Image 1 (cartoon, rainbow, N blue to C red):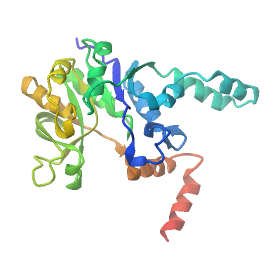
Image 2 (cartoon, one colour):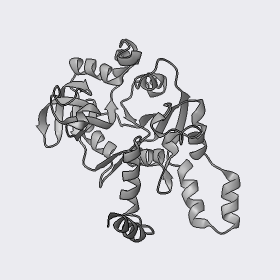
Image 3 (cartoon, rainbow, N blue to C red):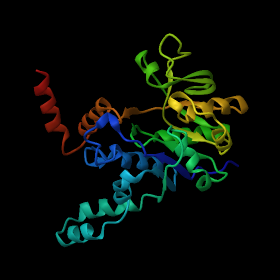
Image 4 (cartoon, rainbow, N blue to C red):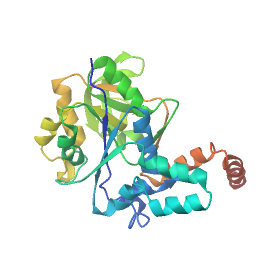
Length: 289
């Protein structure tokens, strides 16, 4: 019987330079999409996929993330006194979403470092990795789709999306063998190879479901491009040691770490919002005339 996936690591220690100056004094993960910060969508997806412990790998300038997922008694009392019950209930649910654990990132730059930082908290369990600025909207949570593959095949699973030629410059690209519909075994992974060298148009994006043997590999992975510790380098070594799978995720993916992706997420979710959709639709139509 497979171990239940209970823990997720969410790295948020980056500077968010693509959104400067907006992110000079606030984390990019706290930028709003409609009326919720980006990272809340990420955590809600994790919880809907069965995650109980959220491990946020953070830095000194990200305290507002901790505050957001904590209780705020003064605001709650004010809402209660003023009869704003609906807003009060929404706020109280946020801190109860999961068990939140915060650790400060230490070590070399690179997206492998926060994963290694969480090693003692993860222990010998399989775990998820989600990025704090990725939103996946669909009938079934994206992470849940990875969990289902793990439960069936008992191996690490990468989330994948079909990308165009320009996407081969933005994402790690997978060379795969089809196992069944939208599920693949990964033969190799190449970081941003460009269209001429890409082995496919299946890009790795959104998240991972990893097994604890990744930690020893990460601990001995040499620093790579820009003298940083890259998770994809460790996964490349993992592929040589055991079967690693990919699941092409069903749903719509928004990279809200980019200005365009953030705008697209706001517009798309705004067009589904019961209070906003009609006025927003009319506004957009007026701008397209």
